[in-house]
Amino acid sequence: MIDEATLDEQLPQLQCRQCGYAGCAPYARAIARREAPIHLCKPGGRDTLAALAKITGLDPGAHAEPRPDPPQLAWIDPASCIGCTRCLRACPVDAILGARNYLHAILPNECTGCGLCIDPCPTDCIRLVPLTVAAQAGIPPSGFFPHGRLAEEAIRKRLRRRYERHVARFEPDGSTPPHRPTDAERLREIESIVESRPRRPGIHQPGRTPPTSG
Image (cartoon, rainbow, N blue to C red; front, side):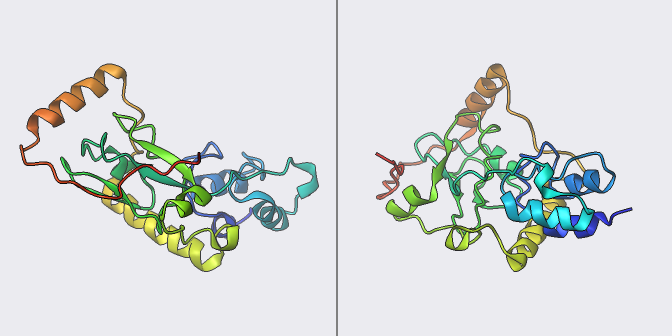
């Protein structure tokens, strides 16, 4: 049987779930058991497909080549963030700073652009911004896409360590991040947080305008 750990080492460790599995390790396990094809890692693209093919002995040409999306970063609209902390649990590499009732912020050099923080947000205040647009807005580029290429081995290891710490922090029982709440749940949560938020004077924060491509 193929060693699933060897397969996992070749995956980008974004834990983005675009392959249909709960993370890189579960996908590697499915490949090792011959339960999943080797071309499902969209962020990994051609290089990851070739690496997995070499390990499994399969022909990469027999599979459709995954085409990665352009690198992106998450961005939080400060005017809409209510400090619910849902995105903190959803981010697999802990690239979001925040606490309940306080404005959250993305750590741009840690964000992998996986987009898993978007659906759990009850106010839809998170969106993905292309790296080129983020750079134009003065946001530093992510450290995980050097020269436009996906993470090399050292960065994959770093991402895996961050993910393991995230799991230990938020998912010690093996549970998964929450799904997008229903409209009724979103409304109740927003009302509860707003009502419980301590009243304090507003603070003007210059430069916190959303990056735009137009």
